[in-house]
Image (spheres, helix red, strand yellow):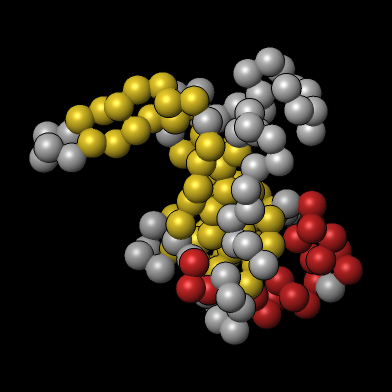
Length: 140
């Protein structure tokens, strides 16, 4: 099984990652994901987890305060700052995903390279569905 599969087609843009942390709900299907380093991120539950909780409400109670490795889709606001993460699934310490935790892979257009004061640099990437519009799963 490939943790980060290759794109289905060359112009498929996406941001996908695995982060370790504990989830605490604040309202229905929304909550706070607290990472191992103490950073808190707003989180929403994806379709699979909504279904899991609807079918097994005790799962969420048992998951509170327990560190999981979460498969996430990061979401940004219009300025490019992290707005929240959508939690797609969770994995326990026994999972092969555990060792991959705290990694995000992004495919998109490079918008700019920013040089920091300490001579390091970062890359700002624009992620959107497709440069030609929202044509899903169609090869160019």
